[in-house]
Every structure is written in structure tokens, then in C-alpha cells.
Length: 288
Image 1 (cartoon, rainbow, N blue to C red):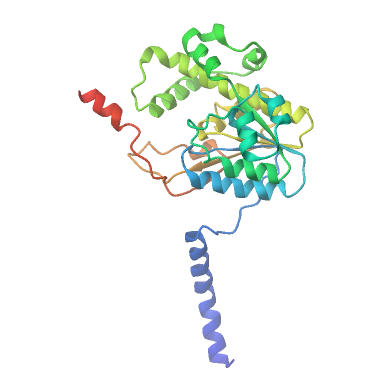
Image 2 (cartoon, one colour; image 1 turned 60 degrees about the vertical axis):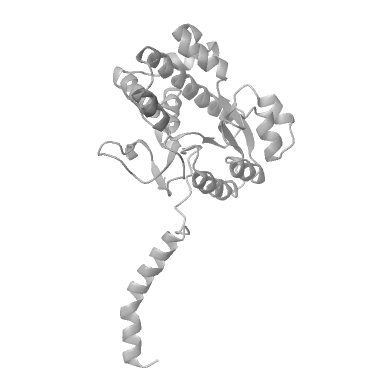
């Protein structure tokens, strides 16, 4: 190559590199971020976004490739199904059924890639959620219905009025502002019950010998300020041993509608899933 040609190539190289990186990002093959090394890893989601499940399944495969003894706790399965899960064949369909996953409610097989990745990586699968009956009891009966085995964790976890208001606002927004005010305190308590149960499931898995415990749950359950990480820290887990990764869609709507990304250690954004407006029917009801 002649010297002038070499100079041109050197001048073009940075631009070509930037173009290649942009193309990689657009193609969804951007160089992978460093893997979290924390023993507690929490991966959020927008429940009906297939891209979030595929992205996290790919991350699970990378994480589990190191051979560390791992347990994957699923929000989508009940915490009382450990024996059934241990006895079931190590196959995604069998494990999801043994764990009591509501196939219609969770739109199975949306989460199937996560089950397959966890099983392929040799991880144990566990449920982390309270039952639907327990959640209903918390909404209707309040504190009297709090599960007895979760009482010590609840008492150890600080809960300020600001946290109560933040969680109530999140629930109101999630229900399109149509939730009757009288039900909100119970809904907050049920959400706290779910968070405490998932935290306890993670703690139990760690105590049983897991070197790493991974939670698969909605973004609201992995918030550091008032969800599962808050209960883990109250139980004595140092903050630096918890890695929280949220999977979000592009920001939209008026200022202030954007989720607080500082609640997570890392945020991954994907395209918005195709869905009908979940609030449309409620708005129409309000007009009639």
C-alpha cells in the first residue's frame, strides 16, 4: 500500500469503527457488558415484552457458563413448590407446571427461554411468590393476614411513609389510576408480601449452598429503594453483594413518566412490545 493510501486508511479507520459499532447496536449485537459477579443478581422485566426474556436468557447462559452453583428464583412460580420442582423432570414444560406457573396469566411460553437457559446451565429452579390466596387475604384483611414465616423479615425491614407513598403511586399508575382508594393500602401490603417472599426465597437458596442466586421478576420488584433488594439488605446482605438490572422500554409520555433509572445498577432498553393500550377499556368505562 502506498503512503498516501495508508494515510487515507488511517484517517478513515476511526469513522469506520464508529459506523461498525452503530451497526452492531442496531442489530442487537452490541458487545456484551461485563458479567455481574455479585452473589445476588436481580433481573427485572416488562412482563409481556419477549425481548426482555430473550435478553435475560442470553445473560443467564453467559452467567451460568462459569459453573458456579446457582439457583434461579422465579416470581412466576409459588414459593411452596420446592418439593414438586425438585421431583419434576429438568425440562422447561415440566418445571413450569410443577412450579404452578399460571400459563394464561403469564402468557406462557414467553418465559420459556429463561427456564431453558437456567436448566441448560445446571441451575436449580425455585418459586419465590406468595400464593394468589395469600395476596388476596393481604388486600382484604391487612396486617392480620401477613404470612407468619415472613414476619421476622418484615419487622427487620425499615418502612418509611415515603416508601409507602412511592409504592402506592406505582400501584396506582399500574392500574391506570382506576384502583379504588380503599383498596390501595391492602394492595401495597400484598406487594410488600411478594417482595419479602422473593427475598426470603433468595436467602434460603443461598443458605442451602447456592454460590449465586438469580431472581427473575418484574422491574417493580427489583427496585433498590423499596422492593426485594431492600429486604435483602435488611436481612444483612451488603449492598455491594446485590446486582440489580432492569429491562425497560424506550421512555415515552410526559416528563416524569420515565422510570427512575437510578433505582437499578444497570438498565437495558429494548424496543417497545406490541400491545393494546391496557388503560383504554378503563377510560371508556369512565366515559359511559
